[in-house]
Image (cartoon, rainbow over all chains, first blue to last red; front, side, top):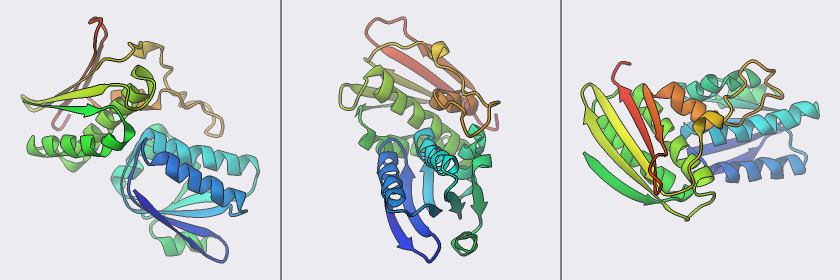
Length: 111
Length: 137
């Protein structure tokens, strides 16, 4: 798993490639924490190149989103998620916690 | 029938998935079914590392894959602590998303995605998890 963070005017774009599993999820968690600590609370996660997400990966995003909602400050949205990866969010019922966009341009435009 | 043994650590989850995906492809499953099988095995292995061994590199995971009539049977064995899957709480899908508890999501995924899930802790030295998936099931 690799990721690249690009700063935009009103949000940050995190483009992830590969698998988000118990091995890589803590690395994503760390990246999200660093962004929050630096005052970056609006995040677009580009999932176009993510082939797989496990429950531990989903929970990283769920817990981060909960933290943002509790603080009433910022939001995580997804872009370009594949049907199979989306189905894992759906199975857990957590798809309702996030907004999903077809592409990064429309997701970044939300903020 | 094929059998492979992996050291129980998170780094190996990707290699385990590659192995399982290849086996499921050879068995003729659809991409949706292959993703389901991949998820079930990945969650099961993560649970073995987390709960049976209680950490990384404390034991091995043996995976046996067998094509059965119209499906696949995957047997995972470990030598860690036995745990009662019935005591793992089912995720509370009814409570609000903001504060829903999240334990047991891995086992919930496994049970939802596979047609048969059998935990066997009767052997004192090893735990066995049998996962069966049928095509078009």
